[in-house]
Every structure is written in structure tokens, then in C-alpha cells.
Length: 608
Ligand code: GLC
Image 1 (cartoon, rainbow, N blue to C red):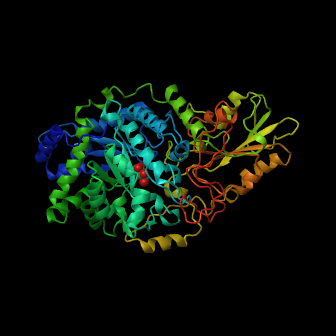
Image 2 (tube, rainbow, N blue to C red; image 1 turned 30 degrees about the vertical axis):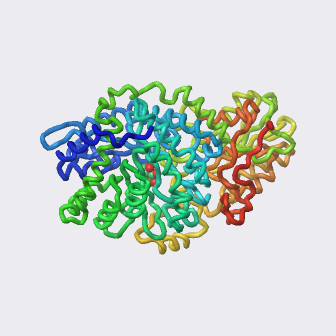
Image 3 (cartoon, rainbow, N blue to C red; image 1 turned 90 degrees about the vertical axis):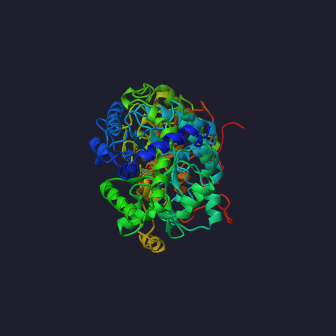
């Protein structure tokens, strides 16, 4: 049910609050520092409207109780009313983009690229609902999800956050995830955030935070379309994107933010900037702030320099370079969301019914995640029906990602860039652990050197990428591309160290092919399972495999992979991303010349 923004009571409450607020209180509501740079006392003193955790920024021992305590302290500070302090409850935001994966013991769902392959919108809504429950268990109110990116170049380090290269899949999922998370704004609701507005997945060379060069018609068809159902479903917040459109950065784009998003699409919630996103608009920080506020951004994610932000914005209002009407519009939107969400009616985080709920990481959610893993797998090759395997087979399991829950989960998991190994991913199962519990005779040899045709009937080799996030996952063939992108954009471009210079796995991680060769040269048939955040060029690895499965980034429940390898369940997944033949090919469904290795929608089955 879309949020009823026109609710009479809401407007009365909002207007009465607004009329009682000082300029300092209004600007405080528009400011979102990162937790490491602000104390509860400063939240009170500066009337701060929201605080966030950046990826991996976790309190205490990073269990739900630690998060509840942290949020309780911030909330109490925001609600300490006094003569000069209006009690306006603080919103806490976090990236729960595939479950509440920052937190130890969380259920970590497959990243969006795998969910896109499942082609199951109903599943998406259930995942949203379970994620909301686990977010509420930590006293948090707001997740910066769903990502509605339509990733058009697999060199982008955030391809895995995209459901598909095809806007129709993203459009079909957008409202389902919003409904799952916002749960009719009832007891089990969190605030959702559609991101990143707009064109984040369409940059040249897939460069993160780069230049999206498109006509408005193409931008509307590819990247704006998924926001329509999200807004109709009542998404309460939208995050603006780092990228630029035809040279102009979205963070300062009046046409995109005000005319299109708020005007044409009728978005009535509030727009938040991305992480220090204002900084890149202009050399002069004060000028950049005015540009972004006047473009229609309402709340500002200012990781550290939030005092400076407040000072500059206040000066702009006093000088008239930012009209008070724009400030009032921004604060009205923020207050309306807080009222619509029921934030004023909730008790302190420590006393909320959902806080510290035993549902966090519970079996019910893990079974849902395991179902999502099963449905996300795509079978690309199965020569002579090698799969499904018998549980009685003598199986050798090998590969860097075989017993690596961290690699399975990918970025935005416990750490911003994710983790490797099993330690940080509590209670889950690695792909190896799933196989060995289903087939007790299975043997693990990560480098494959234990392979022995006398003792092994078949090998399962789990290979692929290490975890990464954002620009650190980019594939960039040359740093000249940075200069090229920067020359097209007004403002500054932030570029992080790339993951590699090629999408060819044999050049990115040659040890994977070595492991496969060690095994296959003994005549042992190989089932290859690829754990990656995107399609990779795997021609050499395919040639060494009798069967080949794209597992994407399955998350904490790796046993979902063995469920399908042994035939307890059939494959359901179909490619939501075209698979390239070589590293210079970036095929997308609908290209005038379309010649991928595996087409969009491809996926084999056991059954008919
Ligand atoms: C990051 C990402 C954004 C995320 C935000 C907060 O830079 O671009 O998706 O929500 O910062 O972590």
C-alpha cells in the first residue's frame, strides 16, 4: 500500500512542527553524519535528523544488542526536549542490501545479480520482509535499499548490486522489494531507499561514479523506468547517484532531482545524497552545497565534515543563495517521512518489540536464503548429464572459493569490502560444508593436489572472485580512462583502485585454472561452480569443465548450491545478464548486434 502522503493528520503535524523550528533545527534535520564522527550529545546539540553506518562501521562487538544500545543512545539524545530543542526522533540508516549483512550472525541473502536470475518477484518480497525484521532487531529504522541500478557494463564494480541489464526485471522487482521492506508501514516496516538516482549502471566503461552519456529517452527507458513502480509502492526515500549525466552530476541536477523525480514522477518522500556526494560538485565546498540543496536534495550524508556543512548551509540561507522555501520543502519532506513511518509514535529502540528479536539469523530466514540460492543458480553447461551427482559418489571438492563463506557473500558483508574465509560469517554454510553434509564421502583439497582418479569419481571446483565493493570492484584496462571520464564531467571524479584490468578470469586469478587442470589432467570430470559478482570471461575454465554453474554471490547459505548439484531441486535460474565471449565484449539484450557466449535468459535444466 503506497504511503498516504496526503494524510490530513500528517500535514497538520508536520506544519505545526515546521512552524516551531528554528533555522538551526531545520538544517540539523537535513544533516546525516556517520556514526564515527558524532556523539549522542552532538546529535542533541545540533538537532541532527539522522546518523548512518557506512559499510563495516559497526558498534561494540557487532551483535544486535550492540546496535540497539547505540541507536537507543542516539534516539534518546534526539528526543531530549528542552526550550531550544524540539523532540524530533532520529532516523538511523544502514546498507542492509542483501540482508543486514554488516552485523555478525545475520542471514546474508544472495546479492541482487543472483536474485535477478531467479526471476521470482514473490521471493524478492519475502526477502525484503525478512531483511526488515533483522534490521528492526538491531533498532535500526532505515536501509539504503533496493538498488535499482540497471548495470550495462560488467566492468562496473557494483554489477552484483543490480538485478539485471534488462530494466524490465528491475522494474518487476522494484515495488516488491519496497513492499517487503516497508511492510505497509506497519510494525515490521523499515524505511526503504531506492538508489542511485539516476543512471548509476550506465556509465562509460562501467566506471563507478563516472559519466552516463545518454539521451533523456534512453535514460528514461533504461534507468528511470524502475523508479516508477517503486514510487507507486510508496518508497519513502531516494538516494541520488554519484554519476553524471551528459557531464552534469546528479547531485546537482535540478532537472533530474526536482523536475523529473519530484515533479514528473511525483515522489513525495525525501532525497538523500550519497556519501559526501556533494564534495564532487565543485572545488569550492560552499558552492557545492548550494548547488545540491537548490537542485532538490533534501538530506546530506556528510561522513565527517558535518559541522562545516551546517555552517555553510546556514550562511547560504542568511545570504539568500539558498531560499528558506527550499529549506522548508526539504524539512517538510523529512518530517513527513518520519510521521508517515510512525517514528514519533515508536518507543525508544531499547523498548521496541522488534529489538533484539530472536528472528535475527534464525532458521526460518536461513531457509529462505537457501531457497533463494537454489533459485539463483544458472546451469550453463552439463555434458553427458554429469549433473545431478549421486550423494554416494567419491567427490573431490577444490577451489579457492569452495570453503569460503566470505567470498560467497561478497561486498557489504561485515566489512565494506567484504571478508574472506569463514570466521566472520557466523552460522552459515560454505559450499563445501553443504556438499560434505549431503555426501559424507566428499574430500576437500583446495588446490586439487589430492586428486586421484583411483579415489575420485568427480570433482567440484569452486572458483571466482574475491569480495569487493563499489569502485574497488571496477575492471579498468587503463588509467587513461579516468582522465577521459574526468574530462567529460563538470566537477571532480572519485576513482578507487580497480579490482583488475580484465574480465578474463584466467588472467585475474590464474590459480583457478591451474587447480582445474591439476584435476582434469587425471581424467577426473570437473563440475565448475563460479562464485562471482558478474559474468566473467571463462572460456578456458569452461573448456576444462564437463558442467558449469554460475552461482553469483550466494551469501551465507552455501548449502543451497549442493541442494541443486545433487538434484534435490532442479535449476530454475536464467541469466539476467548476457555472458560475454571475450573481455572487450559488453553485450546487452536489445543490442543491434548481439552475439554473447550465453544469451540473456539462458539456463539449462535437469527436467523438461
Ligand atoms: C556508498 C554507496 C551507497 C551507500 C552509501 C552509505 O558510497 O554509494 O550505495 O548506501 O555510501 O554506505
